Amino acid sequence: MCDSCFSTEIVSFEDYQSFEKFDIELIQKIETNNNTFGLKVIENNSFYSGFSFQIVKCNSCGTVWWFSVPDNSWRGFFLKEENAKIKVTEFRKFDQRKRFVFVGLVTLLVLIVLIVLIVLIVLIVLIVLIVYLIIT
Ligand SMILES: [Zn+2]
Image 1 (tube, protein in one colour):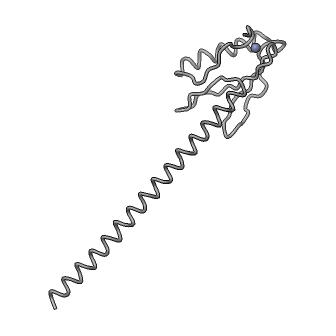
Image 2 (cartoon, helix red, strand yellow; image 1 turned 90 degrees about the vertical axis):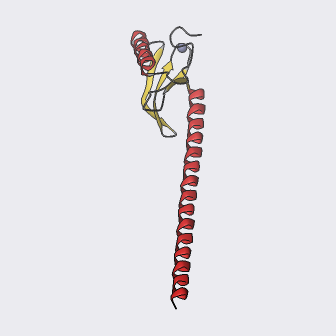
Image 3 (cartoon, helix red, strand yellow; image 1 turned 120 degrees about the horizontal axis):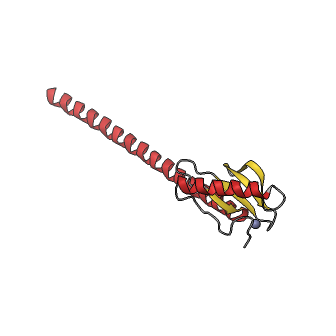
């Protein structure tokens, strides 16, 4: 438990209001500590696995926090560094799986369309052949 930073992590912000409320609280904590103890911004725009976030360190307890801002469907987070890395890695894996399924479905659809086209062409050729045989 540390009074200078936060006792609980935020895995994802419920809505934009809860994010704004937290953001104000965080800024207040950083400003009141005046960089001597407590929370201090280490890096404003850090990147990990394609994710951008702010790194905040607590000089009182040594905890390094990663702060990710919500963006559209992304709900953001405020997590200890080790847990943030796990979350981002898990999200990336899930994202890749989704992409894999999407590519698979598109390939299947293209194959089905091709098969339908071939069947149609064969049918047309057969009909033309039958009509030709009947006429002659
Ligand atoms: Zn702390």
